[in-house]
Length: 417
Image (cartoon, rainbow, N blue to C red; front, side):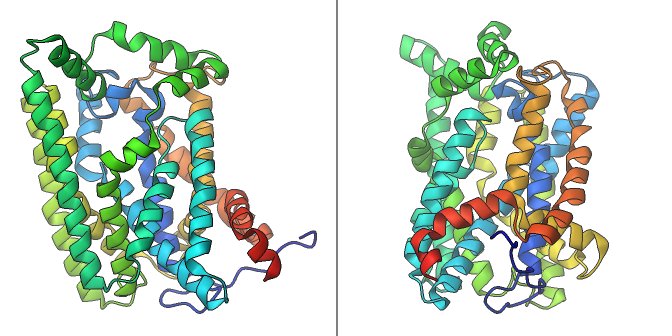
């Protein structure tokens, strides 16, 4: 290791030999890690309910509402869906290559998920409450049971889990609608809990979160420890939704969709259909929320139930569009692919930099910016990703966290190999 790693093999667009990079996956991952910041910025900078409800905090100016509307219409859920899709594809790829190297691919995958779960818990507890890595690790373990299915069977199974997610969402929405009467202490408490998640709670109820995030790091960490969700409960509540996208990713990888092997006409059809259908639907759902006066029931209905099927279709549409637009060897493609090869590092680096701006251990700007102002930071972070990722890879071969994950996962197998 003192001499540095061997140079990374050149990325290829389609099916790769062992050790080669798949350019299509790297580019898709790069777009996802950059674009998901658009969805996550309110989570870094504003109290929790503002993530889904723009009038909970962050300003009611037309420009603030417009930025929420654009994010809902073009981004919400689909960049996370793209991450989940790629996680599923990478799961299969890692297992295949481990088996080809003479290891036990399933065992190697489980070790990777164990390491990722620990790293995700560190991120969740000590950096940012919006972590998705621990959840992905748990869902990734479940996904292992399905990797042997055919693409068609995987697609049907993915739709089944999406339907299960919708069923859970329907039960949640039913509970909220019943609780609207608030005629018992239990119903009133349930209503208030939904207001804290998706509604417009009184400012006083948000004061503890604001004080904690503006306070010292130890205070923010204590708040996260007290209020973080349980990854095991999340596995039940949102796991079916995540798993549906991962299984769709495995199917898309097996079929050649994610490796760029389909005819360009097929990608054009999927891009036109997926985005032509879902962007207007997401815009209509956002307009419905606005027409309701941002009522917690409308927000919850959209977030937990109505957008589930359209999220999957929109994710496939965006994947098709990105694969159409990438140009092997082009400056943008090379830089975005490098950001994708370091998606893990760039994801955590984004959390570190954004919390340094908004939390008390940094500039302490939490809940001080209007929503529209937050998006100034997105192109700055994208520029950093594209500027530093390729030179780092040229020098070291892997991102720092990718190397840590790889070495911790390989363990004795890596030393034996």
